[in-house]
Length: 242
Image 1: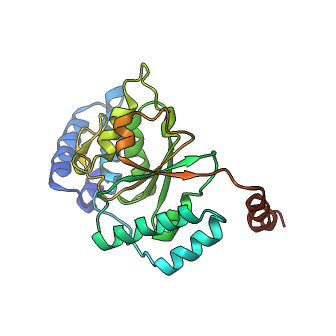
Image 2: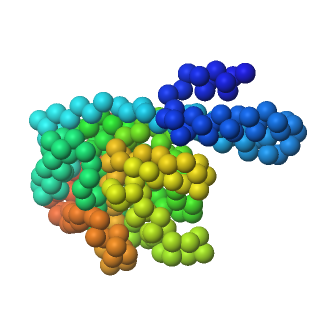
């Protein structure tokens, strides 16, 4: 059937292929009218659609990056400089083991999507509510690449709740020692997140759990001065209205 064809065509790593074959066998034994049939089929489709080995090529052109950031972040000199350094180091080392950039400041400041554009990567924005690991796998499936820029919005609002410990789950995702074999509860298979560039935003650092803060490099974004606000209006808001 269609799923077999997909499986043949897919570029699954060995451990995922084994799981997919097992699930397919199970799916075939389930009558269509059983609710488990749909659950099993969804699982298998997710497994086959995940970008296990598909990444988009990075084309970080630092000169272009500087231009993009100049256009997008008027007045945020320190921020721009730091982002460029960060990207340059990543390019040299060709890996992402390093602190996660966390932009702290007034909401809506610092358009992080421009960093994705600069790298030529896919961009996925994730605000934290509810089940966390499932969201990461869903996000990867949505962008179809295993190396997107993943924006974690408002990490200062990660309070422990009856949902468990979202900050603890997030640490697993961000820890370079663990995240190449990140296993979420839905997939229950290790997935390599080491190529994802995570960037966080927060309104304040005071409520970010300390172990999480340790993994981050905090870049304070000051509230805009009056002059900068005028410039931003002239550069962005007004041209878009015209």
